Length: 153
Image 1: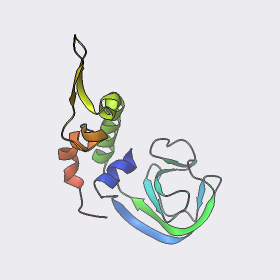
Image 2 (image 1 turned 90 degrees about the vertical axis):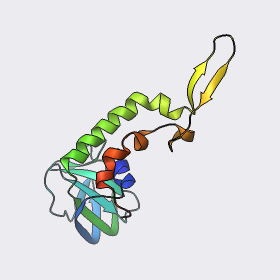
Image 3 (image 1 turned 180 degrees about the vertical axis):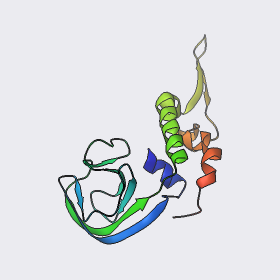
Image 4 (image 1 turned 60 degrees about the vertical axis):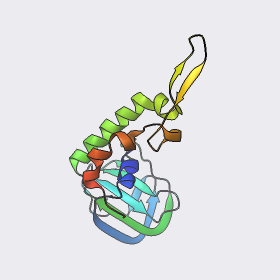
């Protein structure tokens, strides 16, 4: 979910880009750029591992599974960018994730209401950009995310 939010606002909060040749073996990235425990980083230019991950001394994981290795073995030439995602963005991302889990059925439905008493009728959703017009997290959290939005990467 963190990567989805960062891509949506066009802001990865890149602190340090580290271009070069990298090897991932058994979930370990080498050479390892200067990262602190719990810090997010973004892999770009990989065939198998492009995305946002969290660094831990015991291995790296994606934002949905920070305890698992998450990285697949490969050698690539690309960039590993250390990120400095503000705590408030991380907290808002968790809030968005909770909202999505609680509203998944509503978001995926193209209807806002159905009435089956006597005659079947429905109301089609309008507005919003997700799921055929249903209101989604991007719409619900737009005003709170705009603070960090950039025009492009």
